Length: 364
Image (tube, rainbow, N blue to C red; front, side, top):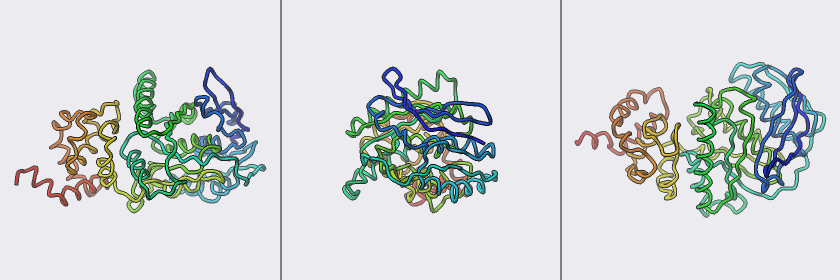
């Protein structure tokens, strides 16, 4: 049995930390989320929701039920037990677990009505921003805040020193972009990755949603940028493959989650971003650095798409285009050969055909 207790706020040298004790088979530990004093006011001590979602994968992996010694949002409690936990168990062939709690709350907390989305400055992220800048978005659904969560994405490779540096660099990069957009940025640090010690790809949705649920007194809508187009989604090891199902099930009486951009292919999103002038300065898809290397998996996929779209030169200041051009021909061959087994390659290939890209490359 995994037992989670009611959270508390602690002030630490200009930072505010929301933390909760949990007991894992007799071993006590603490999960925490930390931000600056400005947003500490909105941290939710009244619900255990954030910690419940954050620790779900720990319990799932061990096949343990979760006992919550505190208040849980009734909507979340129902959705987890009757929908999301059974779904995850079926996808990954885990034992189905349950959440136990005798203090369910259905009354919403006071809420500022903010609307948020993560700002990593990648294709998914910037396409979400671009889509929600237009006048067709109702006033109560227009983005007011950006978030940047340190829940594990910056701790997937390299030494701890390198991880800390890339995290700080990406925070500074995203914060500068947010400032130019005239929006506030909420940065959240956490020890969640040290506790889970699991694949980030498999667990990122619950990790990031848990950090957002810390601020249920601030947000009423949150856009989680989709990694997959819904029409092509197939359950796999990436939790993004079923975000269109899981995100609504993680909503509470206070905040509603949307899988933003799930109607668009990666090529279409890249086209949207290429029409977003600020992206020429801030697009960052690289796995290893802030100035995109031009050679890694994400860089070459993005640059080939931009080349097909005729927009690659717009990004000369944020990508190493010379490095990409050296591998461009071999990567085109890889995309063509892999188009029947990789949907992202298929999308790029189809766009190549539509725009006569390959004929142009061959000079015919």
